[in-house]
Length: 228
Image (cartoon, rainbow, N blue to C red; front, side, top):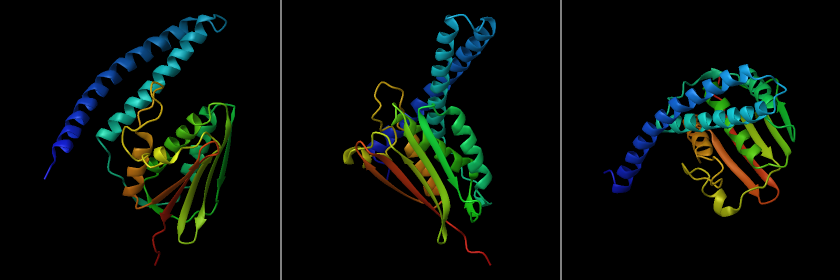
């Protein structure tokens, strides 16, 4: 039986999805105008820096809108037997381009990873979500270490940062949709909730360790299918 609270959440979700679609259309228009303006303004003009900052902010808004839409209308994972090495190498290249110079990004990928049943696009989304959260936890810089290796009959993914860490009352709520500690700074509270949902669809196990002032560490285990 659907409770009144579930009905309210469903209604809020439908409203949020409609608003997100409208916002996304407006942000595309803003980005197109910013791209046009940037093509007209020489690199030495001081105002160009303001436009670049505005474009970065607009792109961040589109990312948040995309997260909202994805959470409201989840896609079905297309699991297939796959080796994640190529996807992880691509994730490493992508993150090295977008991480600030103040963050030391370190990847350690086992070259002989065992195959798992996975949707590699969704696993990449999990890694990017965890990496973005780690980046935001290190505004003054730090180390982001991502390790992927064979572990017994599983593949183990570890994402560790040296950021601000989380107190127990925050750690206990990180899987809740729309829960965020970044009030007024653009957080949607969807990143970890989406990652947790994707991992559930992969029958993967995620555990988290975090200490205030010392950083956070996410451990994820993907079971390897038995091969005949």
